[in-house]
Length: 289
Image (cartoon, rainbow, N blue to C red):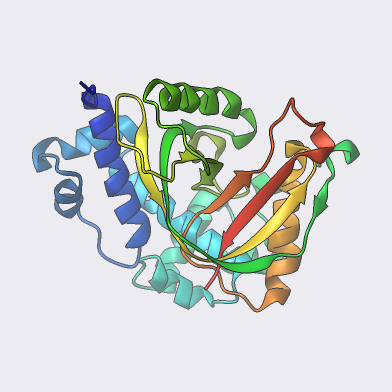
């Protein structure tokens, strides 16, 4: 007999539904009653539950998500400040400008011109030994992927990905779910050049061709399919940050591609410990229209 998911796991899935709905409906008016219905929580208790799980009030989470989405569009697209304001739910560009300056310390126009925030300037440059090779991308139609996952939060550089994958593999073995074609993937929900470290979230996933079922401590999700620019990076994981900056700063502006409103993810083709760091292979999936 299979174990039923714990209350905590059930809450996490329901909160994830609400969070994903927020991210996909930033241009709309978002009210707590709607979110409570989506997550199947009582409207009376919803705010306290979501605040406790997110670590910040719901209203602040919505504002932060809107501003981070605006920052990504300012940095990576040619959309005007006015169009971005409406796309992330502000009724006037001046409202976005006021909130953006309060949060980031610069105006949207200044950020759009210089592409940096004060917090970015302080970031360390990767050492030369962290450099790797980045291939030209292939534009592919990628099918949906069914995955078991565990959620990690905090600086992407400090997440113990190995421990997360080990936990997932132990679960796969205990449930006899092993099959050919299992993929190691991490889905990244935030841009570390924009979001504070404590707000960074990622899902460490094993893609299971037969489809997983939720159980205690393990979530289940669908990684969205569609059109992706797929880059292959060869080298140590410490060089991935530089690889992303090359993609965003050099390839994307010249590519003619427009980003879709979906997270990036990485697929790991071999494992640390089995090959030296300079031979690690990672595929970077960038969602494009």
